[in-house]
Length: 279
Ligand code: AMP
Image 1 (cartoon, rainbow, N blue to C red):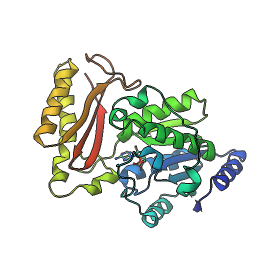
Image 2 (cartoon, protein in one colour):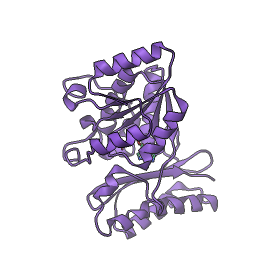
Image 3 (cartoon, helix red, strand yellow):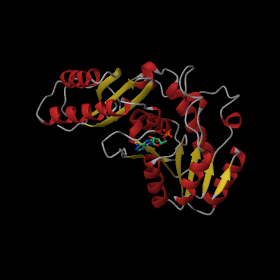
Image 4 (tube, helix red, strand yellow):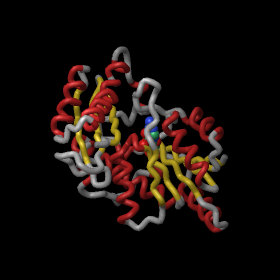
């Protein structure tokens, strides 16, 4: 497994293997790898000749006052995991070399201000700017993103389509702890009873799915019921929203495809979760 630090070396590596007619699967991550990341990595391994994992804690996607400085970093542990998973290359650029000095912003307008974008207005532009750069440098045939960050997945699909980037953006299911909590690098921030209170996100989503199955069609009733559960667990709600899975437009009345997305703070830790809503 090669560890590549510069964009030029990465691009050269990619050009060589693509010229040999081989496909590259890319899994972009911010490190602190867990089973959620590993599920993406395993899928990419199966579907491509070569596997590249990027590890980059992207400063552009954190706002001032967010957890950029204390975001978990464990490169040694991550490299053990990526080697075991059969990565051909890990692209781990220096911060200064990959996200400083540029003034170009890639912005998927509209969607970038919905949901998480309301409370984090610069977040998605930070994500798309760096992912566009990763797509240019790594030139993957396929890139794998988790449904855990559902809005991110939809936005990146739109970005790749709009910019005519020849990559297949593949969405992968959410991996959960045995009690249902969606795996996240941020779960390690949870202290004391925060871990059990965090379960109210998943409970709320399951309750929403039950209500939809029972025939409740007005999304406001479902959203309010989920909000009540989160309030009871003493979470600070950012949003509970039922949306169209392709456009993220709000849905008032359930009839076709729908997704429920939830974001809330448990203490200082902001968590997100989502799932399909079937009628
Ligand atoms: P991150 O390192 O948090 O930026 O995540 C890197 C990729 O892993 C993103 O595409 C995430 O959506 C995905 N991911 C993170 N947690 C999970 C999870 N629990 N299940 C599936 N995918 C995940």
